Image (cartoon, rainbow, N blue to C red; front, side, top):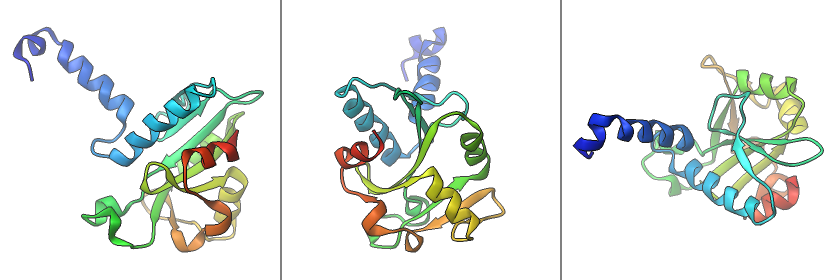
Length: 172
């Protein structure tokens, strides 16, 4: 850290802004996803911002019309439980109940994007699929306020995407 910048406060402000754009410290998978998605959207004439109503870097708003689209994206949770994302273990994610409630009450189209060991591969679920899985008990609410999602509850053929192109083709 440069002391001259630190005394003026500019460096600290920059760090706070970078944290807000990046999200949780160390969540490289989500950072890479957001960066690559932003570039892919720009090439299609669209923009991406943080969804203002959600207060989380995991909620990205796309400038689609007639309705805006929100992607609730989460990284493979193995990063916190295991040292290596490439362990071959099944994917595991948590979607916050309060965020899902906000999405359901907003006038947006929304999807859950569950990243699996790569910023360009994972699972895409429509809002109807998420709500249906909650209603049928496949996604269970944990004490921490997250609906827990195991890869075993996902449709590999229907919901899996292998590239950002594939993901964008499905949501745009």
